[in-house]
Every structure is written in structure tokens, then in C-alpha cells.
Length: 457
Image (cartoon, rainbow, N blue to C red):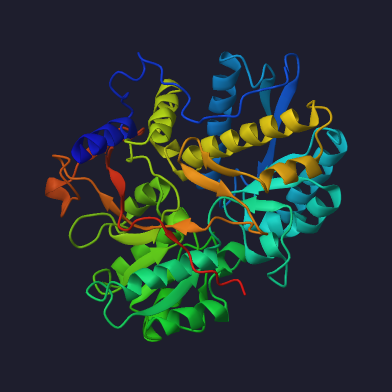
């Protein structure tokens, strides 16, 4: 069964359809609350904006594809309680000024409809935290910083709700994994090589170092920063190694982890230094970009990288949520680069928006009567398996981020689907859009889901 799941995953990655799925439409996997109010003739807008063309583009562009496909699915199935689903969004290119302008336009143009907003990045969350609270607008985000979710003091819950655990808590989870795996990580010393923004700095706080040290895992005090636009980070990587690091940890995504991995190969240190990072490193984009540089064994530079995976991934086809998203991905003829974390979890975000809206409308009596405060009340009362189990949605007692995580490793499939390739001779190669060949990246869970340590103070 494991090999069959892997085979199906790779067939889809290569652009093939899952056998039988296109012919036999699956039922929607989530047990949504039954509608008590008929919303026929209404429009339920999904508002979102963020970086779709800057450093986050590799991750975020499939987000729009997922919402587009979800809107199409629901409208072809009678809408949500009869209401048509639509999306309103804007590309801010990674600019804080553009994000502020987008927020100002959205709130001025849709003052009566904008009760729930999807954001992409911690930086935007920090920028808009106080404004969201003042305007009473709930925001869903995949992952946020301590400041965006809990304020500068780390103890003031706001109006943003993150589905993933805080990055500092993910780092604590990684330290637990390292401490429990001495055969893989003997005498561990971790050095951060990461981006300098709010996302990149998360986990570099003293509380994280102190927690890891209590487990016997040393963390270098001085992080090494690089910009998303940098193409040469030899100095930063060498500084971490010279400081004693035998594990490099990064809060970066797409090009970031691939650049670090390629630098380790250039230094001839890929076998001596382990590489790890937050959940965004366990992504198809990293698996593809990491193929620009090959290790001495002929496999891509990011092969063997560790990371968090606080949700189900594409190869876990035993789960109906993953099966359903696979089917929609295939039916909408999405390409390999779109088969990433963002496409998968964004279907979960749309499911969360629908469930939250239905529960709220049932309670207040009409869509027009719903306010941001009503949405917030609903959100904080829910214990919900998103899309039937993709991840859990629970924000009780002031929590603003997810609490469950597990560790995984990025590998590449071998030709007979029996496991991970050990070299290019037994690696599965698939066609890419440019007529060349790609190694087929897979993400393999290494642990069960566990509660993350709470390190925000």
C-alpha cells in the first residue's frame, strides 16, 4: 500500500491522473455544518492579498490556483448554502507599502463584507495586527510570528489565527527530535542561516536557545542572515560552520534552503553538516530548486533535509482530504510546480472559511448581519478537523497558532517506488515542462504528530 501511494503521488507529480478518480467524483471530505439559512442570490467573497511576485512567489502562487479551483468546485455544486463563492485578491510583491495600500483599499471598498481576510506572511501580519483589531477583522494565516499573533509582549492574543505552530515552537520541536536521535545528530550544535525578516528571525530568540540547551542541543547565539535576493552566501554558511555548527537550520523557503544546500556542496560539506528548517522547507518547490546543484552522490543538494510537517502531505493518499485535493488538482490540470504546500493547505483554508461562515450565519440569522466579532466568536469556539483531517483547527483559551507537529525528511524516489533513491542510477526521473528530466521529490514523515513546546514566553 505504501508503494502504491508513492506511485500515485509520483504519477500526479508527473502530470498523470489518479486512476479512476477523474471518472468517479469523490464526495467532499469534510463534514460541514448543515445550512439553516438559504443564501441563494448572495455572494461569499474570499478576501486575500500578499506577495505573489516577490521572494514568496514560489510558495504563494499556487495559493491563488487552489482558491480558484475551490471556487469553481463549490459554484458547480450549488454554492455555499446557495451563495456563490468568489475571490478578491491583490499582489503586493512583498512590499509593506503595497500591503498597507491593499488593506486600505479593501477596507474602504468592502466595509460591510470584509469580516475575514487571508494573509500570507508574518511581516504583513505584524504590519496589520493593530489595524485588524481596530477594524474587527479576523485574519487566517498559515503561520505567523509571535508579534503578529500575540503582540510584542507575547501574551496578547489578537485577531490573526495561524493554522501552523509558531516557528519558534517548530524549532523547539526540532530540538526534541535531535535530542532523541543521537545516532543521527551526535554532539549537536545548531547554527541559524536564515532570512532577516520576521519569518527568518523566528526561533533565534534566547528562549529557544535555552530550551534546546536544556535538551542537550547547543544553538549558536549569532544567526547568519542573508537576503532572499542573495545568490552567494558562502560567508554566512562558513561562519556558522566555523562557529561549531554541525546542523544548519533555516527559516527560509523556495530558493533559500536550496541556496544553503548548494553552498554546502560547494564547500564539500554536504555529508558533514545536516540541514533543517521550518515547515516550508518540506515543499515541492525546494525539491525542484535543489536540483540546480547535485551532491557528490549524484542526488540533488537538498536530499536528506529535515523539517516540520504539521499537516498531511501529498503522498498520504490514505486520507480522504488528500485524495480529494489530488482529484481537484488533476481535474484542473495543474502543473508540477503547483503541487506544493500552499495548494494543499489553501483548500483547507477555504474549507475553514466556509465552515466558519456557515456556523456564524446559522447563529446570527443572515450573511448581511455577520460582523468580524461574530466570526471571531465562532472561530474561538471551534474544534474542527479541517477538510476532514488535513490539520486541526482549534483556538481555545487565547491560542492563535497550531499546537501539533511532526518531523519529516525530503528525499527523492527510486525507480521501483520501494523507497528513497541512493544515487542517480536508481532514481526515478520525470518529465518537466521544459522537456528535460527531474528527480521526483517526496516528503517522508519520521515521527507521529506531537504537541509542540510552548516557547513564546
